[in-house]
Image (tube, rainbow, N blue to C red; front, side, top):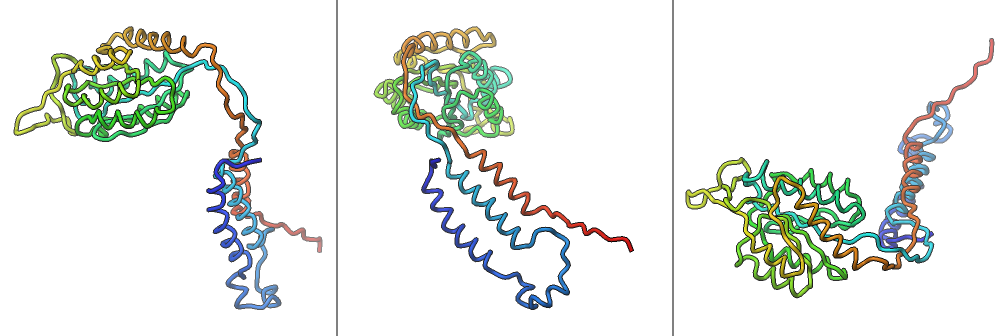
Length: 325
């Protein structure tokens, strides 16, 4: 058996040994006051386990938890697997303009619906989900677990919408996260931005050979931007309006990708997913990659720790047989 994080094991085991030694070698408070002879007369034994035995069991439980936290595994060497899917990054805009209600119920929730529809079309592909406004947030690393991604999406609500979109910050995060990916595929769900706000973003996308797809949410007519209390957002006492901007789509086209302005018909989303799969599945078809074949053991240690923890805290009374008088 090996462990994935030996540094974690070392950091935890040293204070564990010291603490266990101090506790297990320390007498109980009552033992400091009374002699062993006196204790036999005044102590009532109603449990099969002494306090010291419970402490030992408790520390065994903690030891198993430390091993579990260290990532135990059995190494079966390397194996070749055939690529059956592709890796994509979904970037969801959570800026204040995504509260606009020119699509139902608003741009944010409309975008979430489109993401879920696209996930249905990519069952074998791994997805990384990030959100961005002024800052960029990693919501989920690459995973093929679409149900978890759906649950995470449901947790992104209007209350998390922040200021304006920083596409330069998004591009820098994409550059860092995708640097070791052969195919760098990004799908952005946003209402777009002005050209002046996308110049640096465009430059980084081109320099990193990122293939960009854009799902634009909103309408060309636009709508008022709302605050967190669903009141019109005012600047100099004037309401702020936002409409979908297609310059992001232009960047997507030039990167080798494509864009759509999403509507209530899901056929556009299905066609976009089909376009991505056709292009990149053909590229990856028949390719093999080497991966480490490991059997993870942490859950066995977690179960063992819980069993010992339960034994340490649950009382088991003794029952004495009484003879007939």
